[in-house]
Length: 198
Length: 255
Image (cartoon, rainbow over all chains, first blue to last red; front, side):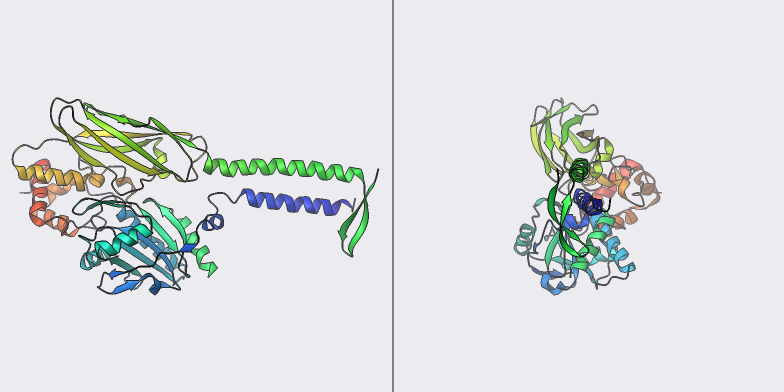
């Protein structure tokens, strides 16, 4: 009977590994984060207070970056509010290195002072949240590099790809959230995982 | 029959005699494990990767317009985009402005089919016999529950009233429809599908317009409120005054 022990043990190990493999489904944080590891495209844009800000300035922090415009009447308000909420929950858990970046998709309207009043309406903490804009040319290359398609419909009315990007402390893109409905718990888990990598 | 094999023991590698019944046990265990592993994997992937049939349809709500999708249905793998091209044709006897929205059947699929772009609804004005094309793009999320193999994306039409009187009123109506109805609805009740996502529902305009004077209404439009955008400087104040005229004409006066 003792001779059976190694076999039973081996069988147990096999069962464990097959179970673990089977559960690395789409919902698994680690497996999903393994999907993307490329350098986040660099940029230098103008912040809500007129400062010139580069993505590299945030090196060493986990960055959640999204694309919004201030007169959006559907998804941008939800994404902005969700990101604020994610930040508050992360801060409440004692974390200090999450930074929020919002890049404008309507440079015609979204000048720095317009972004500033938008930030205030969402009670954004401007020491950790930055709202960025620039010239049409500057922004076009940033949109393109992040896969954001922008179509101007009218003044203050834009159709744009709704995507939020999670960037790790080494400046690598680790996750893209498509659409305007983020699952906050999942994003918080992803942030924790990304944080543990550095 | 016996076979010999090197096996690991607590005192190192040793040659051991392995009896055939042990082999049988091992083979049976292996088969059983693979069987369960297969089932588990099917479960995990089936929840996320099974294709979903997307059918396109329309609810005209009495509007004599018809919608023809380029493709009636698509089979989409979770994690892929769903792009539909549609042709609208007016069979009405007069020029009409229609608000086009979409909804899902079953409704809970809204969680798994976010639109890829901002721009959830739009208005189209067409003359009798006129045709216009539009396209709509969604993203099918992973994790669609089992038994959700078929989903319908339904475009709904709502005929918008043509305001009588001045061109200012009509201009106000156009801005209202384009910028306000996603959340407040064309009836002002604030019960749209997007409105359901707010923790606090959007203001019911029917009461709010009556309770506020023109200056107060204009101030909300220019400066925004909470998650409602500030429409200035995107739209100039003169244009926003037209919206106030329209709201007043639609829902009454503040004495």
